[in-house]
Amino acid sequence: MIRNLFLGLLGLSLASAAEADWAINMPKGVTDLSLETYDLHMMVFWWCVAIGIVVFGVMIISLIKHRKSKGAEAATFSHSTTAEIIWTAIPVVILVLMAVPTAETMVKMEDSRNPDLSIVITGYQWKWHYKYQDSNVDFYSSLARSSLEARRKQSEIDPFSVPNYLLEVDNPVVVPRGAKVRLLLTANDVIHSWWVPELSIKKDAVPGMVNETWFRANETGTYRGQCAELCGKDHGYMPIVVEVVEPEAFAAWLASQDAEL
Ligand SMILES: [Cu+2]
Image (cartoon, rainbow, N blue to C red; front, side, top):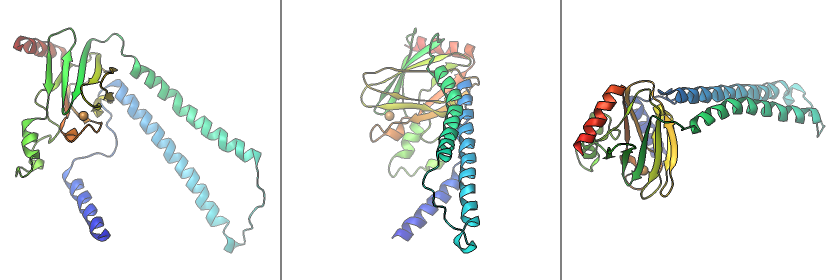
């Protein structure tokens, strides 16, 4: 049984590796803060690699050089103040070196003052609602029909044939490039989480609370995300699509949405 499970998992991982165009690392994203987050992540990653090499290197060399068959005798001391000071001081220095730039970036992330545009995002089981502040524009954003049909049991539609399967919506959020967009997040039923990796945003949407975050996208394009908080049976079916367009195109879009109402 275990062998079958193992073979099954192996088959699954090979199949997904062959089918999906996935990357192992996090994306660099399209905002200044997403790039800073990526650089911090890489800095900490390389610190971990260096620590791993040093610690395991010393361990392996010690095991080989001081083995019993070579006549090594165990030392008998039980306490070394010098060693304790060193193994406390070095990690403290490393943690401070990581904490200073991290704190600088986190302060910037929290600074959502003076936005060019504010959007109230409300999570529902299982869709998102967007309301553009200072305008009448508001709409629900649900899973696109193409994905909805393919996900049905016995639909006979191959999900791999559906472009952006489970990552497409009927009404995407549209924002202007270069504008500071403040997001005010809440939920109407259970806790959801608004996550768009390329904007470097993952923020919980909690009933009865308003969480705040912001981004400024430097590049136009379509950025996709998902609800990142297990929120019920259709948690996997409430994706997020953000379209970043030129400011003129955004103004035209907003006016057209307003006219529809
Ligand atoms: Cu959700």
